Image 1 (cartoon, rainbow, N blue to C red):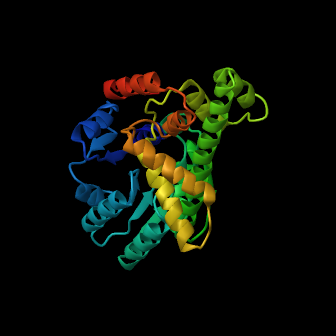
Image 2: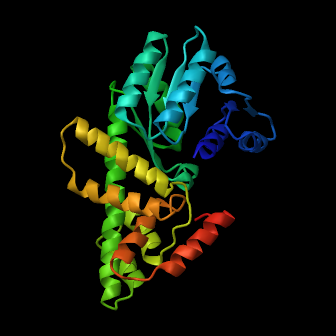
Image 3: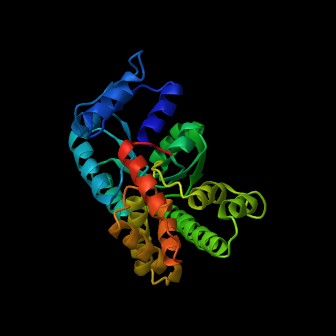
Amino acid sequence: MGSKMVANMRRDGRSLLVFDNNASVTAQVAASCPEGKIKAAKSLDEIGRACTVVFSMLPNDNAVKAVSGSVLAGAGDKKMYHVSCSTISPVTSRELAEEYKKKGKEFIASPVFARPDGIAKRQATWLVAGESQGRAIAGELLASAGKVVDYGPDVGASNVVKLCGNFLIASSIEAVAESMALAEKHGVDRVAVMNMLSSSIFDCLIYKGYGSRVSTRDHRPGGFSLELGLKDCTLVNEAARQADVPMPFLSVLLDRYTSSKAKGRSDFDWSAIGLAVAEDAGIDVSKDVARTRKDVDAGNLY
């Protein structure tokens, strides 16, 4: 995800300093720009010292907290804007915003609806929230990479919206999987059924993309792992509990992702909960699991 953002910003004429915990990844991204407009940092402290605007794309709350601490330590007294594009708890964003504010800096939450290919094609939807100046800067830099939606000064608001969206995607995956199992158990071609549905009454990105993955049982990694799906459902659950919102469908999803993780499928695409739905219906998916495991181990992406 981050490398696609870097490529877009470079094409927009930006000079960039990049960092990843995996030094080979950082070097590869920097080498992708032979004119030297992308440089590799040796540490997060260096990012903090050199940059006024910092973008991060990280897997979870703990990573965002750790990176924030390092970037803040390197920033010193200068003004800095940290735009977090990660899916994290709204509570975490609000806590970090307060920490940044105390040090004269701004933490902006801008989670994104897109897989890596969508970011590369500039088809992403960016949800921006936080202090007005940082929000404006983030919006300006992200505008060419898709649609920017402003959720105002509450930095946690965009995280809530992102969790709502991911809950709906996960619910759609579960619903598609149950429907495909029903078709298959009645001897109807599940792939043909999904193709018809996603080209008629469910003609939209989510049903086309994940409908195809579930019906063909193609769960190769493609930017969002099952492990991350479980993480996001857990974040939705935390947010729901904090606001006393009952979410019965969410309970099913948490169990589905937990059982799939227990079966060793954490590194499959998060649509792989469809395999567990089929198994519950008494459908043998062992060949599909073995094929996906082989693809994952070989690094074959969707």
